[in-house]
Image (cartoon, rainbow, N blue to C red):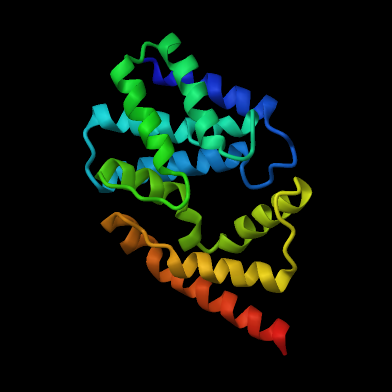
Length: 197
């Protein structure tokens, strides 16, 4: 497996081919998910052979958005199946990676620890202080690309529902992110109260 080679290849494609109006699903998001994945690999003591497969899945998990917005995970799987053999990944490794990619599709239903790590990494920002930046990036992305155009009050309500129903799956993510996620949720509820006054 040439992980470094495929990382450079897919990041170059994301930098050069992503629609510039993808304010949330940007190359920065992919890098952010990769960083969160590496942190969870370390804290959850994942074996090296699975770590590389996880990091590869993190690289590809949203790559299909180059091709299509809706069901981009499916397009990501197609891209992974086309590209990874060129970098020495076996069919078994590719099947494993594509399975990981599909588990990031909402609603997330991971089973194995490795699946749980990728899901937690993908939504790591929910439990961070920069949550509102990413939230508004997604809202703007949806507006500009005519996915959904919600008034601010309805957007905040949708975010309250999303955070209320979300759970981190790994012990590490719960320990690191749950407290701030709950603070973000309370702040959202306060904002709804201000708008409704």
